[in-house]
Length: 432
Ligand SMILES: Cc1ncc(COP(=O)(O)O)c(C=O)c1O
Image (cartoon, rainbow, N blue to C red; front, side, top):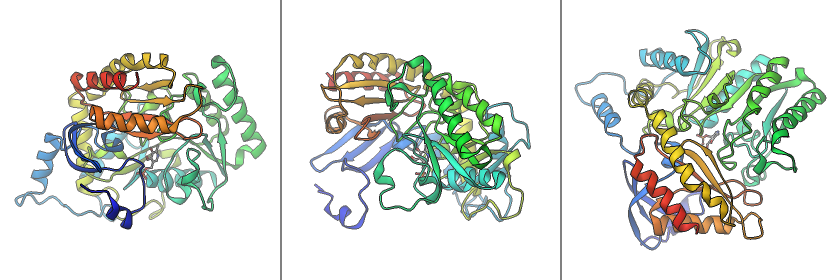
């Protein structure tokens, strides 16, 4: 059995749990820990959100087999920006169709890229900067928007992400409007209103013309799977409209899971830009995109470009992933199964070590505390370990150890009831 010493010699540490993934098929993984090999482990994070239809989904596999076969001549090349290809066009039309707010052909521009950070930084933030002529950014406490320089400057989730790092931007953090993570004691009904009042004050003191954009996760991911107050987004939209500040919804983690294409649709708001990555290529490719209202799109040649973004095979994959989701009503399934699981685990809030169970659809988290009501990251890690070893469920932590250590679930959209039941039963068994 491996003790992972060799990995540690050549790779940066990224996770506290140590294991290898040896096999991945459907909802299941074969996982090797330091002590044993575990089979039929449920992948309850869909590989950090990247495998929305489970692993090796047969329909996509078959389409890619055809694409890569000897008697096919469609371009396999990875370059995407120095030429047009019909799949780029078809996919951009599809994104226009699913973007909130009944967009028509030409209302939306798509910047294709290869990661979430790139979609945020070189897509949305850059377009906002060009439109507004620079200035300060507004982001939120607990936010995570990526690890490249400018995207990282938007983060307020974990200190370690920024340690020893010189920021590229002046970013003003606003408290995220959710009771459980709010830094002050405030009544639930006042939350949205008070955050908006604070935001207005920050904008006015900074000068509205000096605000570049507002970037926000419609449900926070890395920061703790936090759902905002239901009244907040329409009010935020009004503020952005008042000052003509672009509103960026970072949906890299929250898209597809909540019963809609984008989580922000739950709040009936149309953002100006949406960043996507992770799930859209069905687990086959590192695909990202910035979906940008044409109002904000720079038109000069070469302004928004890269090498790999929008390659024909990636656009083909994403198109087919979206079509499979539509054809099989998987968004509806995500809502149905998510509601079932949340109902089955909400009772865990009666246990002293659970501060909150929260989420929407198949994106949900559990915040862990000790018996005195203080954050308990060690207990969170023990639960994660027990889930894996005793119940065969693999998932990861999220949230800040000092404030809101949590467990995250981001399940595949095509999940069947038997898996949902296993998740509910296992969580109830472990967090007794
Ligand atoms: C909301 C959000 N934004 C941005 C990113 C960064 O994406 P990537 O790691 O692909 O650069 C992530 C990754 O977890 C994310 O969850």
